[in-house]
Length: 475
Image (cartoon, rainbow, N blue to C red):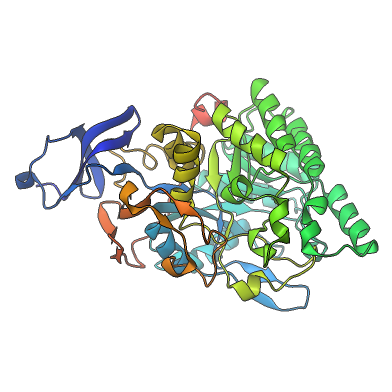
C-alpha cells in the first residue's frame, strides 16, 4: 500500500512535463508513471491535482536565519529563527534552505558548525544545510580545519571580498588567503561561494558620499556599484584560473558586469555558476526613493534597469542558474531603522512568495517553460550544491519533496496572507499561482492553507559536490 499518490496533467519531471502519477512510500518517490496507473485501492491517499502544476519542492540556497545583526548605534538584533522562516518557506512551496555556519576568530571551524546546529536542530520545519563562512585574516590552522569540514559533508565555503559597510570591518578575506582557501577546496572537491565586491571601491564611495553629505540610503547604488562587482568578479576569476580543480558560485549577482564576467569565464571552460535574487529581478535603484525604500535593499545594492535586463537575459541564456532570496527576516521597524548608506539593514523577507513570484515573472510574463522555471527555483540549486537527485527532482528514489501550484489561486500578495513578518516588499504584486499542497519527504506539511508540519520534521542535509558540477559539464 502506497502512502500517497499525486496525479496531474502537468507534472514537471527531469524528462519533461507530462500527465503522471507520482507515487510515494516511506518518504521517497517510488514511481513516476502515466496518469491513472495507480488506483485508490493502492494508496492511503490519492490527490487529484489535474489542472495544477506538480513540481519538486523549491530550494533556496541563500538564507540568513537567527542571524547576528549589529547596528551602528551599538544595538544588536537577530533575524527571525528557523522555526518562523521554515514555516513560511513550506507555505510558499520551498522545502529546503541553505544557511551559513559562520566561523569567527577564537573558534575552530568544527565549533562554528556545532554552534550553528544548536540554532537549527529540532527547530526547523523543512530540510536544511549550511555553507561554512570564513572572514577576516585567516590563521594558518584554519585551512586544515576547512579540509576536515569539506570531507565531513560541508562542501561549500563562503568568502567575502569586501567588508560590506564601514561598521563591519574584518569581514573581508584578502586575496592571499582566498588563494589558499581555493587550493584546499579544490583538493577536497568542494565549491567556493563568493560575495564579490571590490572593497577599495566600496569604501572609497562611502568616504566620498559621507564627505559630500549624500548619506541617505537612496544613494546606495553609488556605493555598491556595478564597477565594484566587475572588478571583484574578475579578480576572483583570475585567482581561480591559477588553481586547478576549483569551482565557484557567485552569490547575489546584481549587475550586468558580473553577468559578463561569469559568461566569459564559463566560455573559457571554468566551472563557474551564478545566483541572482528576486529583489534584483523585480526592483531597481529607483525603488529606493519609494516610502520605506529600505524594504527593497540588500547587499550588494539593487542596480539600474539595464542591470536588471542583463540578469533576465543571463537566466535565459544559462549564465545565471538560481534565484535565491538572501533571506533576512526581521520586522519593518528593524528593516527601516537605518536611514543612511552606512547603517541600512540588508537582506529581505521573501522566502514564502519566491516560487509564486518567479512563476509569474518567468512563465506568465516571459514565456519560460515550466522546466526552465523549475530549474531556476529548485533543480539547479540541488545540482550545484550537491543535493541532486535526492532533492530537486520528481524521479524514483528521490525524496518526496513536492509542491503543487494552483493557477486558480491567482491573487494579490498582502502581508496579512504571509507568515514571516509584519511587512512584505512584495505587497501588491499579483501572482498567477499559489501553492495549495506542500509535501516534505512524503509528509503533507501544508494542505490547502492548513499547516501540518512539526519543528522536528527538518533534517540536516550532508552534501557532496558532483564531479559533473566541478567539471562544469552538468549546467
